[in-house]
Length: 153
Length: 97
Image (cartoon, rainbow over all chains, first blue to last red; front, side, top):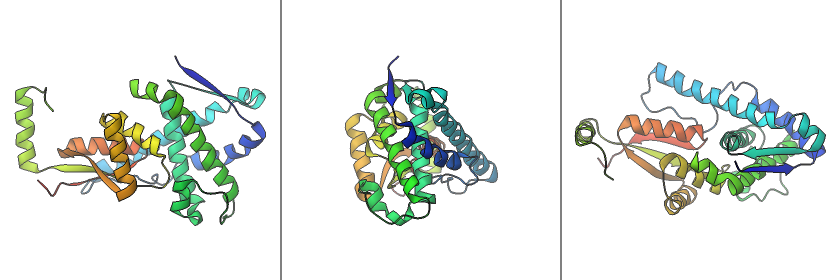
């Protein structure tokens, strides 16, 4: 099984994990982008939102589980064909929630282009932006090295 | 596309004519990476690389792209799976049918 190990700077990444933990606590509202079909009855609406929320919780827990004792001792996290898809999705939903919670002031053009070196920071925004960019880097690594594995599974 | 059993295809065609078609539309967001969207389209919808990239660019440049159309139940299933991958996907009636 293909596996990649990434060496990270613990002092840089550790503070970002606090942001992820805060965002990843049991979601109280549906994630951005969740839209129930028109005319859905209460049962479908509840199942739709509930299942997506449960999946989101699972994804974020899987991501946080990467940052275990080994990470804090050696700074290494590993991705493979088994965890690639769930980590990819965790990064996606966390980035969406970061935008909702902290990064609105940046504007969508800046977020989309990645041209975010300077701009207005809301309280907590600097750490949130660091987290936003860190999660994108994780996604790019997975897509580059494990994209084929995700498609094959 | 072909390959289904004739009786199943006939049943689907009848339902299609009776209840109308629905479509799955993916909306642009400023967060998800282009390469991520391409992968999701390939994974969920079975697009080849070129189709996935073309549809991704439609979403990016025009704000939306119709990625599938057909029976409502299947449209909902696709929309749900795309939302599991955190894309903004909606189901809407296909006015063309």
